[in-house]
Image (cartoon, rainbow, N blue to C red; front, side, top):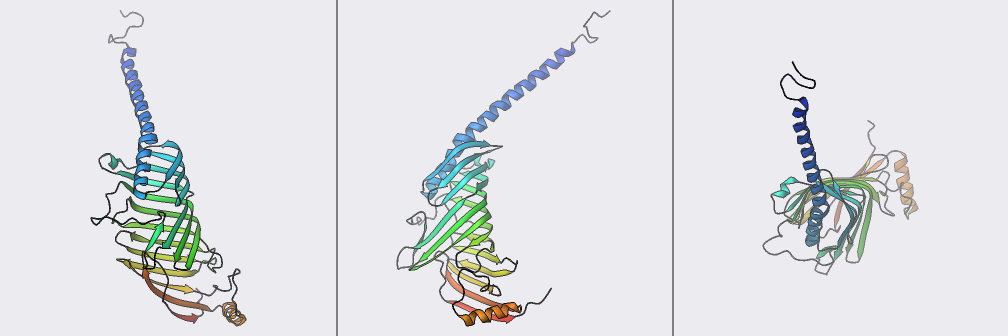
Length: 325
């Protein structure tokens, strides 16, 4: 006869459950330790590795504030800034686990929120050499080639950013701005390596006095900065959705050829900042536009990839009436 609280097998069910409880308690404890380690590692160690790699590669002052852990293998920085080049509201990065066995830091994905980017190309001497600033001075690469990469970014995303470009060539200065910029760049290394970096970009063109100002810019292609090779497609869409300008650029060993087409059906009549000086020109272009005549011009020119300038440019074109779809 069994007494009260006894079990036919002679083993209390609570005795079976208690080891299971202990197992889950220990598992939770271990997970909390691992999670705490990840937070400390990515908030302090990985962040410093990232900033140190950038500083040594770019030789620029880099600052950030309020570092946080970003699940599962990342961190985030507020007010990220590369002096004179980039200022972003927030940076988030996710580590690629292959970094654990490599001698370099590998970022699987890096996102810059609301970056403001300034890029200047300035002629340094009459010999035609140029330097991108920053840095202000150009440091020649050693004859053995670029230094080994310390930082590899597999995917870089720019979200709701702006880009300001200044190209100063002798006594001429050309500048423009892109607003509402969205971009993705794949395979980027620091210091720069002889690898192909692909990209795609969209934004709104802002340029005072330019008829295409306010148009949507779309670009995609690839570039190898060390070998000075590239292939880029550019498209500028006017407010009516028509392509105001399209261009295709190819560079090999620094020699670049640019070919494209510009459609000027609305090029002059849409410009309110700088009307045509000649009344005859206004009459001709307004008349052609009012009857739906499209003026198209093909263009081409050669330049250098590291010293982009528009010198002798060749035009050919036609006047036609677009066919209704």
